[in-house]
Image (cartoon, rainbow, N blue to C red; front, side, top):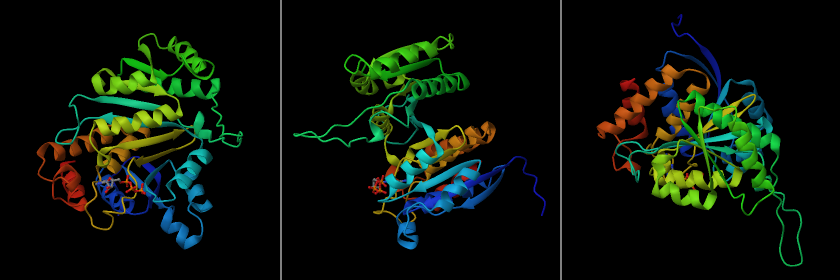
Length: 334
Ligand code: ATP
């Protein structure tokens, strides 16, 4: 049968473990209702894969991700760090994007939050260089390079420019970490000169942790180093109420991977009760990455309608609906 769908993409699909499989199925179900021709190539990774094949991330899976236009990743259980860290390294996924947005009828602490955290993904203390022990403890190195920080800061400004954001906030601790974060701050203001229409500000990370609670609506785009970004992202998740709603993207020069922030949730796996919205919002980030903004808006509007109606919600949002029912409802709203 011939298809009327226009653009075509090859998507690597890694459902992984636990609810990863369920939320992935629900998300693909909605994606298939869009006017885009997706060719899915399925790969194995995670705990079950380790048990079956002896490795949590087979090289065939990596090849398949490298070869695709983008990758959708569900969740990995105990092996999550091995799987996702390895993919990030192999694919040089330098930017971790974590949107923090309040939606209706969720457990969000505020109703006017909408900002993006752009986190550097390749250096900082997360190089985990903890080789050296002293007589009394251990030493970890923190690497900050001009090249990597410039790349992430430019990414944040480009994101702001392309998404009608008016301000970028740099977060650091340059008063104490004078050399490393001093460099980060300096590069931030150098890059900012190329974006005269975008306002800038910089805060210490500790102050930012407080401002996220006292004035979250004032943020639009936050750019920061690896560890600070990791911590502030989870604070952001707490602000807008729960793991079932938080998507993320890992972007590199030659590829990108989109995944919900939650894990495999073994406590609710296999029961068809997981909230698929975090995975769906991750797929929406993928659509925007592919330039399919119209479909992304349509998909997001369909989810907003489900949240607004509040008749069909999963247990984490106080409802009784199943994962499959959410998918059906979103699909019907497209
Ligand atoms: P893992 O070891 O894979 O990280 P975990 O259970 O330690 O799994 P999460 O999967 O992130 O960590 O889950 C934390 C809690 O949040 C669990 O109680 C889980 O049921 C709940 N949760 C996570 N994701 C969802 C979701 N999509 N829908 C409903 N509840 C969720």
